[in-house]
Length: 298
Image (cartoon, rainbow, N blue to C red; front, side, top):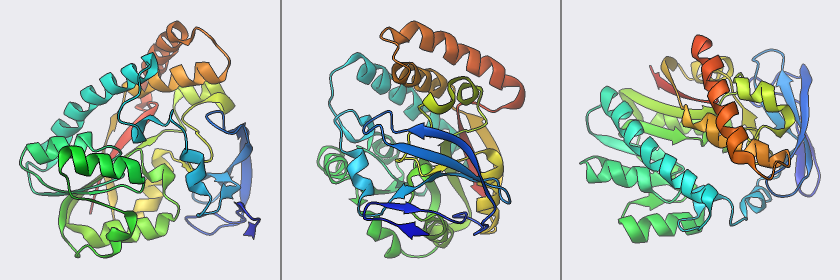
């Protein structure tokens, strides 16, 4: 590992420590800085990761934008309206999905954003705990929904075997230390409990269409770029297994919308609708949608 003042050049895989790496694609931070980053693949465990990555202290600066919607409760724009509408639909869908495995109990959501999903579970009788590193989003969730929400450091203080369900919705790709996070999950999960992990899917048809402009890459905020294979190998290391997987079909449209914007399309909505539809249609055969939910248990 080579470190500059603000970036770290990784010489080995963050999961298996293998040093046999190959370049997948070169891309840029289209969202904020236009800085260039490589996507590198481990030829042993198949994980694809961003290289170089920001130092831990510097990573937060890449989230400092009013356009980063999951941390901003009230932004008025058409894109924001679409985001909020889809989020509301997804809240109900996620609740039904989780409840199909566990009807009620203790629940931990890591990376709650402004807390709408956790609040939905709380209102439906679940015992809820939230973790959110972003201070303004955390304060919004506490003040508006009266939720128990803490900084990431709280994960080390929570009691062992205390949660029936642990959820990470589009969070795992942001985690700085995968092994540390997996150890925390394994420690906190009750026996026969369930973990729900949703991530962008690098095997998706829309990645093949947009390539370096695919918004699902979102470097360097996304440190890892998962497939079912690499997620499976990661959780297997902690004696956990993928027991089911589900598509997040709306993501193909939203990611296509952002990708069209990154390509410089000033009228991106029609193209996004067409390409989102095509992506979902192509993904139907292999169940390799733009984003996937993995249900994980022992």
